[in-house]
Image 1 (cartoon, rainbow, N blue to C red):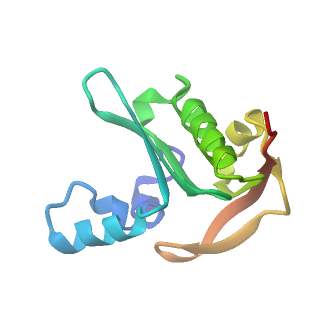
Image 2: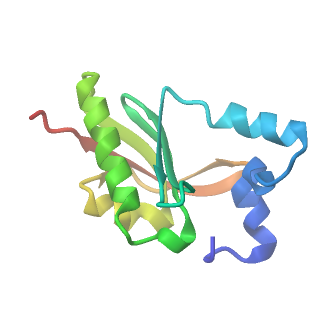
Length: 140
């Protein structure tokens, strides 16, 4: 989140701001939020998590790649794996709510802006700016 002033990062991260916390309430809230029918994880050679994608047959919920591993193809490979899994389940289209920062990344993978920019809910309340996007999946 280098593009976000440090004083505002907690608002963007919500409960994930406490990811290193041992407090049961923090861990329970994170566990509740990350539940999804499909979860794909990328690991490095040291078996450390460097990326994670959550979604379901027709919706990409979230994609995170560790900052020091950006621009190495991890996110692209996670999305491609997810898209194939969606096709295998009979999915025809994937919809998502992209941060404005990530729009160019998803456009490179064939996602299109589906409507104008929206302002909605974030962990800190109202004011989270996002771009609806979608991709029609090509059956092979």
